[in-house]
Amino acid sequence: MRDNIVSITRYEKPYESVKKAVFSCGGFDALRSGARVFIKPNIVFWSSESVFPKWGVITTSRVVEDIVILLKEHGVDDITIGEGIVDIFGDDALAAHASESLGYDLLGKRYGVKFINVMERPFERVDLGDGITLSFNRDILESDLVIDLPVMKSHSQTVVSLGIKNLKGTINTASRKRCHNADSGKNLHYHVSRLADKMPPIFTLIDGIFSLERGPSFDGRAKRSNLLIASTDILAADMVGAKILGYNPEEVPYLVEAARKRGRSLELSALKIVGEDIEKVAAVHDYTFDYSIDENGEMPVALARTGIKGLFYRKFDDTMCTYCSALTGLILIAIRQAWNGEPWDNIEVLTGKRMAPAPGMGATILLGQCMYRLNKDHPNINRMIAVKGCPPSPEDVVKALHEAGIEVNPTLFSNIAVLPGAFMERYRDRAEFDESFFRVD
Ligand code: SF4
Image (tube, rainbow, N blue to C red; front, side, top):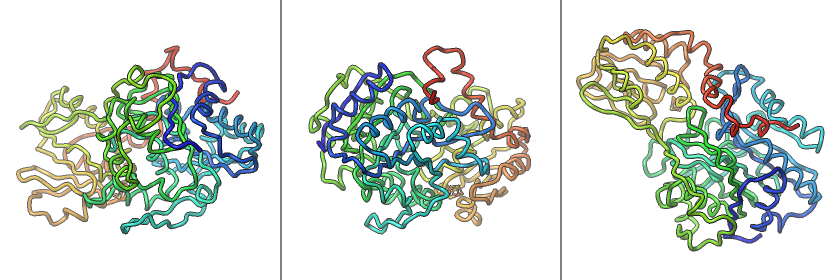
């Protein structure tokens, strides 16, 4: 394998573009026939009850199939596609539905590829040093080569989400929650930076056919970017991916930490970048939603524009894990709909594992078990409304908001699985958002 080489390839056509991306960085130079290969796409969320969230959220099936074809041409037959989809809907059939819809079942029939739901497979505790232990899927640990296929996206907590971050989908639920640590010395960025450390050799191919602003999920904004970034050096691939998304590597905390641990430079000049000119293909992808803070409240700017008063929905931090994050998006939509022009009673909403109640609030909603445990006896709280679950149940969230005088519509929460489909409407009938990229025909 040739370290430090990163290829930037313009996506033009099936198979040929992926082949060019792989070969121009020497991606399969060390690949031997008969190797066990684990392909890790990025699926993030899935909903079997709506048009599934795809553009810039999920790895294209086009790229997955092209990689499989290239592997078969190299004499590789033992190929596993694995992902641990976040299930916020309590749907046992979620992974099977995703596999069928994305064409992985067809890849199984056509090329003998297996699909596994990481959440149903054994995990192995891995010591990552400095007191960090995470439980990884055993199939990926026992493979000879990992083919890491993240989507090119910015991320509201980690600035970007690329090759290293994509590996978070191979750890178990408890480990995922642990990554969002309240200890600022060993926080989310610190944990993410170590995810690749004990893996077999990794070939990273960042799928930037569709990229995503304000990721990682369906409420971000997708773009057609038509780029592929590839390298056998996962840190190098992520540095180039970050730059293309508009961020110097030193602006991304997990890259800073990963480079420090490896004794590596974050200078792009230390890499051999081949193919497209990085400066010409780079385009800024904002990574977070702006919040407005004044005496009327604290909330995302989009919410503040509606004139809401008396709500202090504190901006999330990196300690809030994916399970609570998924609910937060829905809560904000529901609050926006519930606003009828009457100011609320200075309702404060706290999330994650680190926030502290402010004095002078009418009521404080502690969202999730972590907030409840941390703040249940806090002297600043005038009226506590606790939602104790981990993650909180949608029903309990509705009850809490009603108790606070925010009359959200419960139907929105009971129909949570249809929400992603509503966000996909914005891409309907736009030629560049071609559905066939997410099918295997
Ligand atoms: S309550 Fe929320 S933030 Fe805390 S561990 Fe559970 S899912 Fe994560």
